[in-house]
Length: 118
Image (cartoon, rainbow, N blue to C red; front, side):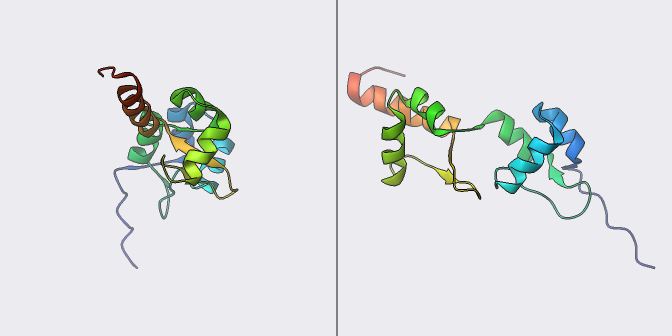
């Protein structure tokens, strides 16, 4: 007989991930399928640090990104296409953005356009 694999101390179950995120297990599974959460090999199959990173720096859609940047949704799409803002394309083809990355871009834009200090 082979010895059982040691459990990864960072690993959590789907139910634990859903509870931490405040989402249903189905929604967490969809996030994984879209490539926004990573799945570990074996059971339990989610990384606590990955889930915490998702909480601390959430993915947002284009309309939310437009609000953060103070531009139109169409302008966000142009900036993403021109690779002027960081973007991630999900498995289903939707563009999503990391909130903290866009906040850095928005702050730099304010400084450049208005001379504001951060």
